[in-house]
Length: 432
Ligand SMILES: NC(=O)c1ccc[n+]([C@@H]2O[C@H](COP(=O)([O-])OP(=O)(O)OC[C@H]3O[C@@H](n4cnc5c(N)ncnc54)[C@H](O)[C@@H]3O)[C@@H](O)[C@H]2O)c1
Image (cartoon, rainbow, N blue to C red):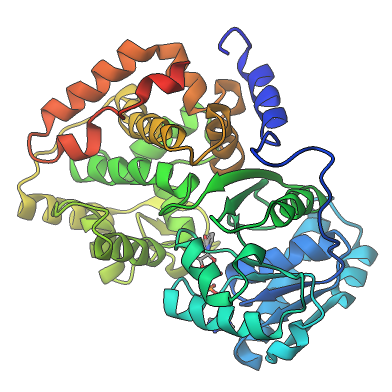
């Protein structure tokens, strides 16, 4: 694979994403003429924009008029930003808004062909919604959840029609990011999966089919990257050092800016959920800084303070003395020694866990082929196209170099090294 240059390789990888077991090119899907979106928040309004942009009438449902008003404003703002960036004419943007209707009544979803849930990331909320959908959705409607990582099979089971249920995981901002992770549940029918592959092309996204597991493929691989970037801060690297290492590598932004954009409160919820499911060990360093920052109301861009401070525009990160003194205090409490890091060390430390987790999702069949990992990173997280992706980079390094680097990090952390760094059981599959 590395005989192709990175750009040729990414183009080839995109051609491969349609290779999905059980789905043949001639297979028909269901017709999607009207879409319902549940939850008019950040993701729901962005998802609505995707369908409006494709000229598809869309109904946005939320719990009350206040939430719907916010959603309508977000949709208008997103369409305006598309006009400003030259993707839409002004007149067309106004016309597309006419295709949007809003409601608090589930009955108004009864004529939708596809309904996407983007409500709070809580299983009880999702259960309630899918029970209702099982009762009101028309026969043959595709029922999707935009959950970031909850169990799609469980959500499907409460609907009473699991064959119609699938995960459609959009990335934020939904109307900008080109990746759509399509989560195939164990009962999802091939016809529903085929329909969602069509849907991804209609809304001009690259759809990658993945299996159901905690965090699916994308967020699961992102976790080690986020963990090590937080550990690096604790050990003395500043957020701006880490982000600079990644922008110099070619990413549009580094993990600390990305964390502030997504919201440190969102990460706190995610960490809580992982802890409850015993997916993270009892390591006092894990997420400690994120929780400390969030505990002081530093939730990221939304509060103009997080890993960074933010000026009047609320978007430009400014290195923060407050965040650094918080880090110094937490590191001292935990007895974590501090030092400086080279850019190469920073990048390697955060990307090696991605490569190792990639080997796990490949080995477990969560992705259909190793190159899907690179499509996910390029289109979901802005991995530089000129570098091909984590799998491409791993192959450039070679199996033995990757394995020995993982083992060196494992040895350096006697207590948790085995959990974080032990080479994936089928690491070699990434190099086949
Ligand atoms: N924020 C991200 O970056 C991101 C990325 C991918 C996926 N997601 C997932 O998308 C979903 C929504 O996240 P968000 O960031 O848009 O949250 P949000 O808080 O911005 O919006 C959630 C919306 O859902 C509404 N809601 C809650 N319960 C409801 C119910 N029972 N019926 C109808 N509406 C209800 C709320 O009023 C709110 O408007 C979550 O499952 C999240 O994990 C989020």
